[in-house]
Length: 91
Image (cartoon, rainbow, N blue to C red; front, side, top):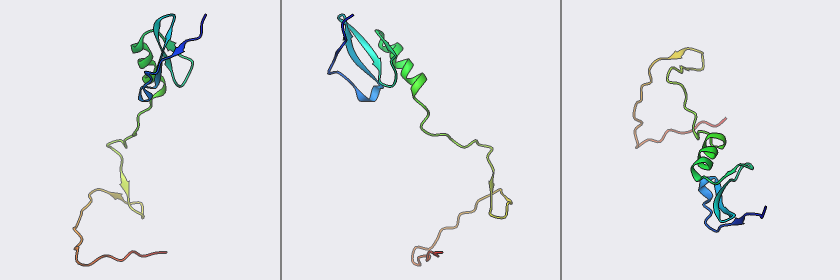
């Protein structure tokens, strides 16, 4: 079986590379040996096996606690006057 020839049409953002095998387009995963002659199957493989969610959100029912361990139920925000800077205390 001849080695596939690499096509210069590679898109780094896709997670797979396109080459040719016996005159047919071949799509090869960049992260493992998976390949297919069907671009959709290769794309589905990359996103289902190798792509993880970028952000994990905190559950909506998560509670906040202050330094003494008491639960924070509301947060009040008071605007700080802009004419008088608040000095930072360094330890």
